Length: 116
Image (cartoon, rainbow, N blue to C red; front, side, top):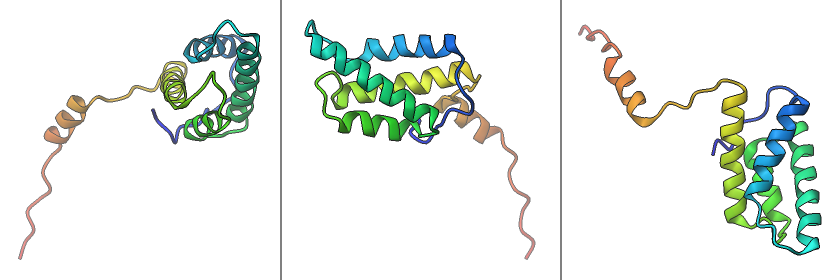
């Protein structure tokens, strides 16, 4: 999860619908009507935070803090991962993996020797 990432623009209606489906799938919703209502309340709050410019970390912290049975820490962490992946896809951000970072570091030219 990239806790410091924020959304750089408003989501389109289609993007918001897709994200809502993805986030709903991460919640622990049982057959109880209360769970469905709690999930809807939680998602509305999360989307208000996202639209308000809060970071992924802030969104996850707040929705877990609500202490609803549909979203404990495990579900909150999953939501953080889903938000990061969604933002990366929508905004074309590629996450370099550790191997690529090592290759870039290895390929970087060495600094010139220091003259004494």
